[in-house]
Length: 238
Image 1 (cartoon, helix red, strand yellow):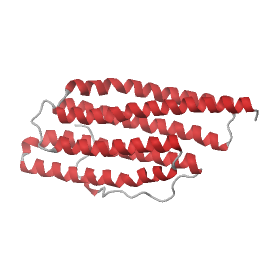
Image 2 (cartoon, rainbow, N blue to C red):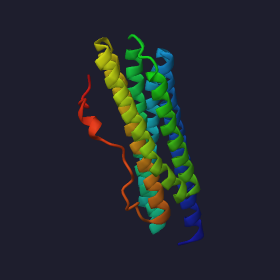
Image 3 (cartoon, one colour):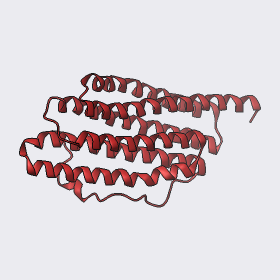
């Protein structure tokens, strides 16, 4: 392939990578701000998170359109084709994490009107920080093409599952001891579940990084926490 075509492809790919990192930064911010809004009972911050989701959605659309254009016009070789396809999947997973942050912010507004559940917002914020740290490392692995760091992120999802399980049991205890806390605990449970699912999507990002770098998706199933607890409360909305 002529050098000028290669350099044009590289420029296009770098521009797409820059958009992915911009999108990742917005998602990181949304995740932490949703947790902060919950803990501080800050309705203005929760509203900011909800509004910010539009920018995340717009970036996903831009990334997908740019990748489609790249594939159509540049005729990439196998490794570059893998990168373009991986980027589209990474953008999709980032968009889902942004959606979970938006959902957390919606429930944070509702919870601001209710009697607080002692200790729960702080525990949820710690869980959100763990997923945020995973996301930050997954994006770093993407930009550095570091499969080892991506695999580390992948393994850390177990910690998020364990934190979710501990919170779930804590909420059950609150509800059994004080029936007046049931509605608030249900909202808190769904927030914790949103964070746990966000962790799954961050793990999927790490797996795409491994695929882009090595050419193979991880074959070994990652460790998961006990999912039996999920059966106690249905996942439908209140």
